[in-house]
Image 1 (cartoon, rainbow, N blue to C red):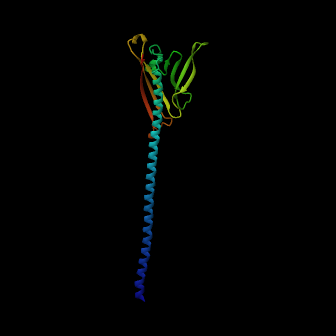
Image 2 (image 1 turned 90 degrees about the vertical axis):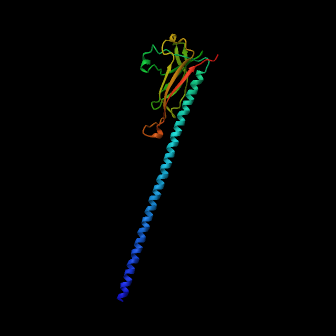
Image 3 (image 1 turned 180 degrees about the vertical axis):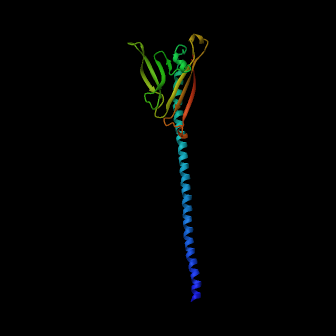
Length: 218
């Protein structure tokens, strides 16, 4: 009887130990599986967020480029008009032009019937936009008044940070009689309303310099 107890007892102990080890092994496997699944989910989430950020960045750049194309094409159409002339060319007699490095804040055109002006409209303090004005002479007060206007940029899509024009001549027009074609440079800083310097996908800002020449094809 004693011999049986001596033999059976160690076997029972070994059986209990093996069951306990099997339980611990199963728990470790479950924990490893959970960690792997968590890592895969995190990796998929990061990939999704990265793709979303790239898509936002591309979409915002596309919006800025679309607005720039529309603005430049509108001005180019006006420049190509046979009857259109630049006005306010002389930068020598306006003291505030020296404060802006001889750049004007508005682009002024004229044809045989109307005066036109392109400048920024900042009535909405959040976002400024470019606007084209048509001016007519008021017979009662003998100065130009706005008769029609249209927005050239959408304030919901882009914001105009700065707009300036530098024309030729810079001085008295008599000093530039030998110039064949009058021209001007347009400086434009345009960004998205969501612009954020700390976030790359919202850091969409374009600094543009465009050149136009008033060539007349007779």
